[in-house]
Image 1 (tube, helix red, strand yellow):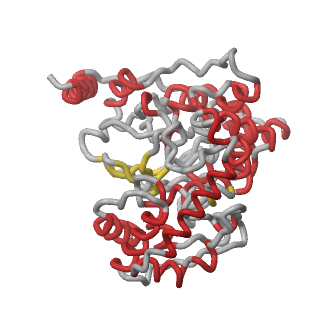
Image 2 (cartoon, rainbow, N blue to C red):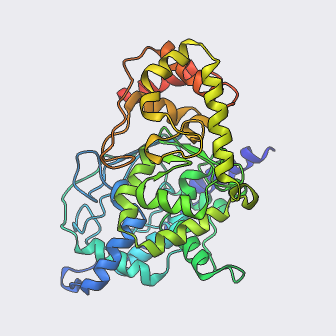
Length: 425
C-alpha cells in the first residue's frame, strides 16, 4: 500500500470509526470577566500584530477581528472565525484555559478540533505568558455580533473528527526549545518566526493533506495566489537576504537588492509587524538570514549586484523583441538603476524574486493589479497593466526572464488566464 493511500486510510478510519471529541470547557460567565492590566493589553496588541491576527480575521470591508475572510484551499474554502469578545458569535465566553488550549492544541472551547489552516501548529510554540497578553488584548476589543459564512469544505474533509487522525500524523505538540548554540537574539527571532509569526505557514510547501513538509521548510510555496519565495539556501534571488536587508524589508517593506513587499507580505509588514519593536524586527532578521545566508556571497554583494545589473542592461540593449519594446515604454522610467547603486524605490527587476523565482505568479499579479500607495513603499504607486493583452504580458514576462538570465517560464499563457479568472471572482 502506498504511503499516501495508507495515510488516507488512517485518517478516514480515525474519523469514521471513532467518535473523537475532546471535553468541552465551561463558558466564562460575564461576572468572571474583568478588565485586564492596560500594560498587559498593550503587550497583547503588539503580539497580535506580530501574529498578523487582524489581517487573517478581518473580511474585506468587514469589522476588525470579526472574521469572515475567505481562505481557499485544495479541500474547499475556509472562513476565519470571529475572535472579538462577542459572547454568542465570538470568543467572549472563552476562558483563558479555553483560549490557550485552542492556541496550543487546536481544540475549540466546545471540544471539537480546529482545522489546521488556523496555525496552532506554530502557536504551540508561544509561551503562556504571551498568550495571556494576547487573550487580554482580544477580550478588550469591542464585541462584534457577526457570524462568518459557513466553511465550504468538501466531504469528508469537513468532518472535524478527521483532525484527530491529522494531528496524530502531522502535529508535534512539543514547543520549540531555545538553541544553546545560538545567541539570545537568534533564539528570540526563532521564537517569533516559528511561533506567532508562523512564517513557514506561507513559505513552506505542503503535502496532499495540507501539512507542511518539514523537510522542505522555507522552500517556497504558492499561497492564496501569491508566491512566498524560498528563504532557505535555495533562495531564487541572485543576492541572498542578509540580516540588514531583511531588517530593512520587515521594517519598511523595501530592500535595494530584493525589492518591495506586495500582496500578502505587504499586509504582514505594514499592518502587522509595524507594531513590533525594532529589537524584535532585528531578532527576526537575524534568525531568517541564518536560514540561507551565504557569507562568502554577502561579502561581495555590491559587486554581484553590479555585475547582475550590468549583464541585464546589456541583454536589454541587444534584445530587440516586442517584450523589450514594452519594457522600454512601460518599465524603464521607474525601474532603471545604475549598476553600482540600485535604489529600493526602483525595484531592480534583474535582482527581484518576482522575476527570478520558478513561479511567475507574483510578477503576473503585480502587472495585473499594480501596487497601491498603502502597499510596497508607502506613498509610492505602481500602476496596473491589466489592459495589456495576454500576448503583451507574456512577451514582457518572457523578456524580463531573459534579461535576468533565467529560463522561460512554462505554460505562462495558462497561468495568466487562470489568474485573470481568479482575480475577477
